[in-house]
Length: 235
Image (tube, rainbow, N blue to C red; front, side):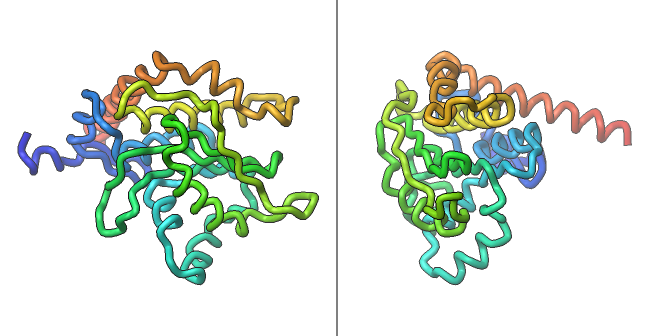
């Protein structure tokens, strides 16, 4: 596939533009890029339109981790209204080079849940991304608002998160865990404050389920492409 063909725009969804090369990534055994993860989180947001849920795009999470100026951070984070959110999900990437677009080699997920006053880091490769996850936590914790007890939210490294079986599915684990957490938040009766979504993640984020995520996201994109095409014909 030539460069121009790979860069061809195939779908605009909310604020995300997907290109033909993204289909190739999903069609093979490849590391998910920022666009695919941002697309899926945007899709989850559309399916869970509650104002108390925020799924942060990868580019914004990366900027928060790398931002060197506190005042710039405030100007950027205030519009997100983090203190009003019950659930916030941050995709974490280990790229530490701000000049390298879509760099890095590993994805994980940092979830904030207000009712537990807690940040939980889910990493499918042990705690490979603990450093950038903690860096983001330290950057945003002061913007989350205080709990009823007046304390700042704690950080928890979830050591028994589901583990990937290869070197390229970390992004799929992020999308799968994000989906489970969003569904749990909307549908669970939340009777056990200590359990949170942990048992749901263990039960639903299995190697086979994660493997299916690749084809599921690809099928979703193709379906949306077909709908957009039909809509364009009717105009």
